[in-house]
Image 1 (cartoon, rainbow, N blue to C red):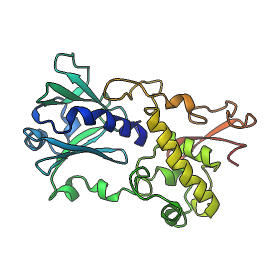
Image 2 (tube, rainbow, N blue to C red):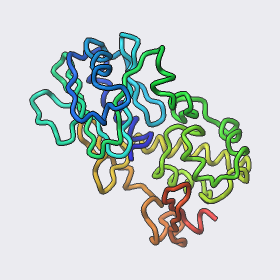
Image 3 (cartoon, rainbow, N blue to C red):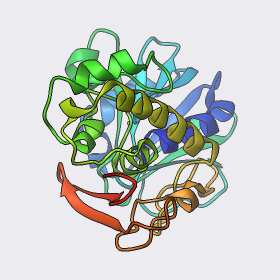
Length: 278
């Protein structure tokens, strides 16, 4: 579930606890969490290293280490990164624990084990994490304007919602924010991308940046499953501002005239107002 706003919230919550701190040891649980590199490589790449910075590309967390290696964490469906002191009991499904020199533990918790923890160096980045090079612009980090987005839209007849979910077009948008962004921009998710005109593209760019920034300010969205929380275990509140996502059949809170429709687009259930988003 975690999308760009949730991952950015996690990044901000980690910085004060881990930057310029040394990783003294690593404890590993279920192997699926570090399946891409294996236990020996993960431990060797992390132990004794100091975290220089915590960055983000789309939905990927990237810890730069003083060894020139990088720790990548992807939360995917149910992953959490929690910060606790060493005396706090660990929750179930804790698969990776980074023990820092200040007696702080960063715990990777993932009940469904779709997420992963990876370490790679500058010489093997392309072979270990090739997907990073394929990411499109991050709208909160990179240059993201009408010209950048239009280049991608005019090339395809795919439904607009499917294009927004394509990480090679825009990094970080998932199903929740794709719905909310298109509603803010007053665009139907089924519209072919190459039929979005310049004014609509400008609206879409503004909606992408505004919705994502507002969601970050609210700490992200925590849904009913409560699987997403920040590193201190706090829920986000942007779900209270959702206007279309998960509201099938309900009255639109924007226009108070339309009903929220839903359909599968690009393999995901999309939601929109039949009046606001003709």
